[in-house]
Length: 453
Image 1 (cartoon, rainbow, N blue to C red):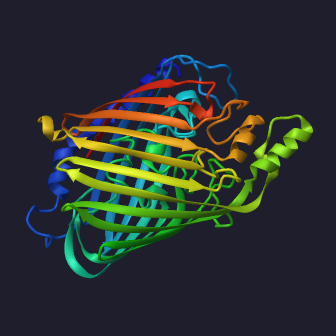
Image 2 (cartoon, rainbow, N blue to C red):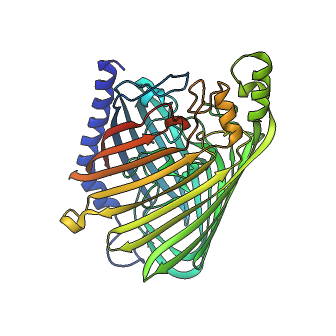
Image 3 (cartoon, helix red, strand yellow):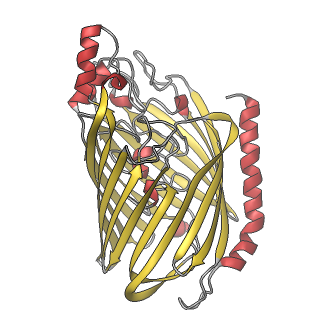
């Protein structure tokens, strides 16, 4: 990336950070609900914003060879920046409309290639040197009260302050991100504030419907009853796996179902979610691509064997508060390993876990320390495909004579710097990047600047 592009992206984001600092106090004063009771009048409208810059770099690492989708083995650095506006209005009781225009700029390491558990959730699969505009979300959300205790709803991004009953039905439709609703976790789900690695933000095997920026069009319903929540949704897939353009007629689609159980362990809250998906679209089978490669002498090409078929997966997501300011999480999942992943990443099996510790223990109540580890793996058919020269969504070293599971450790410290601004330092160690024992391990460092109001 040239210097001008980087300076332009940083200038854009720093201006937004400054604007956020100026606006934070008056907006909060105008829109925040009164402290006292859930009977306070609900917000009728709100405007929020966020800005994030991530600078990330690798140290040089061992590399016997490299292919078209390999992580560059040299010492390299990249930068990403994004600025988002969140504008919402209450159309009638229970109904909210939200729009999220965004400016993005920058590139992920090696153009967001080379590691299945990619090290930056702020890096999209599409990168540009100059800031560009995207409308990431445009959706409606209707909440229907069904009874039970009335609960206060705090003002937040894409959430108007107000109240609802414990038992309720929530219907969301429009353009949004599937992870806005499914596989959420308070300790590991937001690359702007906690872990950066893709396979820690969500279960790595959760191949959720999305365009190259992570958003799709569809609808979801959530039924809250007692300590249980049932969720279901239908969303458009991309026209072609891992592409910029969505289907809009549900000819290629994904259905998602999730059940959540909330509980208390030793008097402390926790939750367990089980999420399943079924994708229907034009996908290729790995062994079909390998068979053609063996007969032609050319690298395996998954696009040559795509036809309309299904791919499914299931994952679990556990969160548990263990002490004041200390929470732990565990995720695991698996998906069909004989057919190519459609949208997210080249992961057929995953297991991750970690902890989040609030800085109140050392006099910094707005700071957070996080530590986590993840193991990602692929099926034998998937290994054969990569060994035959195939390339996936993110990985493909041209060969794979010595496959092994991808092992990742990440730790970060998020510092509340000034006003709405936070600064984070992040370190990741990736062993067997792209499931390849002949490359790595890779040390990756990052600095993140984030603010929101």
